[in-house]
Length: 133
Image 1: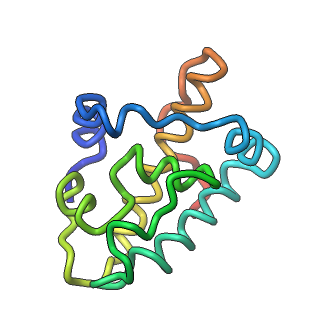
Image 2 (image 1 turned 45 degrees about the vertical axis):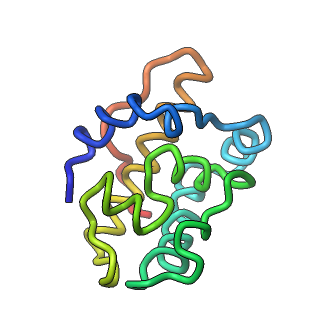
């Protein structure tokens, strides 16, 4: 598994990954619920859509909009098993481990925190939250 600092250093160099931003609806959804709720949703999405060794519709299972976690997954290359293999060095063809799932949710959290800070003009809070997804 590739360290998140390394992944996040590479992401801005991808024109595809760097174009993702939360829309007004996704930002409002996040603000109305809470980051911990959104991360719980993300954990559920990961378990249902990415955890199997060969997920159904791999490469097309993550929508491009509609939920903050979906946008974050595309922005962080945690949207499908081939992106996880390429960007995060999490191999396809085996179920995701608990460590893999935690890594993915932490990537989503890091991006969401940075996106919220970007939108508000402040610096993102350092480190992951204390709550577990």
